[in-house]
Image (cartoon, rainbow, N blue to C red; front, top):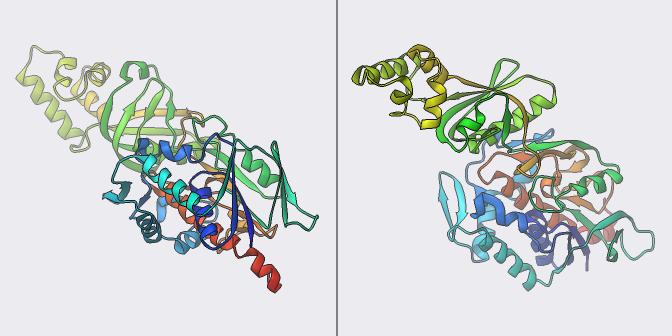
Length: 404
């Protein structure tokens, strides 16, 4: 029986455990938190957007996009939905975004934990890995030194997650374990994260939420555009459309590029159309100042800031192209995922086995893959966990046959 040790009890680690144990492997999960799957509980604002039925080319970013496609093709969205359905989960879908029907992330976690309990997976929590290295004792291929003793296994799946989390202990220690074994780590930075702007009006608009079209510019060139509800904050902007753009903004700033967001707060009209609308409203109530006129259309906080030019043409231009120079981003505790991680070029995408060490596999956020909002990152966790779990449980059989 193949002995598999999985480092990390998050989404990818739990999926790997299910796949390996179903194939007869002896599986142990080592989790450094007090319980498995805590980050799952926070996904989708506690509702767990577990996948998306619309996979498009820009949904994932990596230095090895071909490898990402290979993994996703080996365990698809349909495979994910079939697996969870077989475990008893009933789902609902809206515009491709898939949630448990209960609208509770705990439902997804409990179903996974129930299955690994049924399969006899040994789960150890509050275990901190100190070192991992090939075992020369003959009792397994790998030896793990932890604060609670020595673990040995025929294969190890490193699914330790990233630094992106507000949970204590999300320290990115998995990167150091991979690096200690010779793996290259692509620069790790927050992705899907609120952005920090330059300006003196952010405290004045804090708390406002508005639908808007938002464009990211790097060194003056338009890079990407998103539409949706933007959250104005005391430091800048947040919300799903900002998250979708943030990956490119953070990367640009890291490369010393000038980053700027442009907010169009009235996308349905062009500048002239909005100017005409404002003039018309002013003509209806000539006794009103421009702040009062704008308050009939926009939130009060936005109206007070936008009215400062006191000229309809300038007001319209500002509302259609509200420029926010970006100077930074919030830290990892605000980020949903990270970009960067273990270089996929050093990993076999068919199995997610290390090209440097036989019997060492990777899954989840620790790899150099990040997805857009909308269930894409959890789908990567399910796909990579499934691929690694299935491949690792065949490790011993392949070794006995003498194949690589």
